[in-house]
Amino acid sequence: MHWNRQYATNETSPSKPRAKLGLGLLAAALLSAGTMGCSHPAWDGRVQQWGQLREVMRDGRTEARVRLADVTATPHCYAIGALEGLGGEVLILDGAAWIAQVASPGHVRAQVKPAPTEQAAFLVASWVPEWVEFRLERDIGGDDFDVVVRDYARRAGLDEGTFPFVIEGDFVAVRVHVVNGRCLMTATPDPDDRSFRNEIPRASGVLLGFYSDEPPGCITHHGTSTHVHALLHADEPLMAHVETVGVQQGAVIRLPRVRLGARPS
Image (cartoon, rainbow, N blue to C red; front, side, top):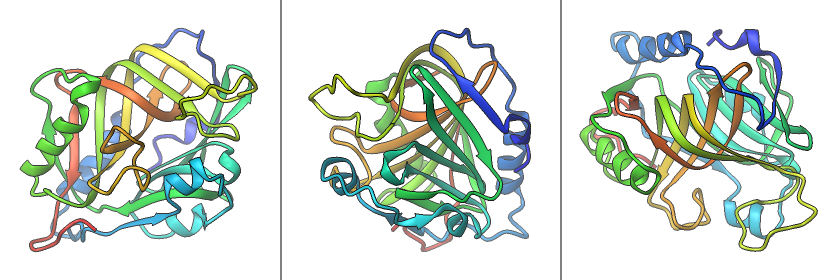
């Protein structure tokens, strides 16, 4: 996927206005993957995980577990996670690895790495050559997000286990963060916290997430069945972990086209 090469290095701050940019090249890449059924096999249901949220975020075991280059070596890789030492966020879209790190207080540097050298403490990945596409029939709020993803997954023949999904379109009430050495999803605030947080009223972009029926603390945080990262577009892209998001009617949700008899892992 070559659409993001022009954004090799960018910084984002919460105070900058956000202008809508097109995502046509990403859409073309995903559409190509979703329509070339004659030459590409369907998804085999495989999801691979390195580290668990509980041990990384709560227990402080943030050592490197996997090299991103090893994960992206297999075509059609889609993955989300956190860098070793909780030094930033990871998002891999069709093999293109995005890294988001706090550059300075209130600023995030988002980079796409064609040949990433970074390692992750936590990563969930799947390799999806072909997608099924639906258009959202109504607006969905943050409280309904997991249920709507599950309902569309059932339409695609996915009804259990763990599976990836992609949502492309317009979003509202987007709350995001980028870790910088510690977990932000804790009840006790840290006055010395240097991580990035932002609330964005409206944005356009792409969400990559994993739905899981595993217990909380494995892939998902407590209180949710999804773990989602976003690539949001403005004057420069912002990549971050999504805490909550609403999705506007007309957005496209893509789910893996499953092989007959296959089940998510």
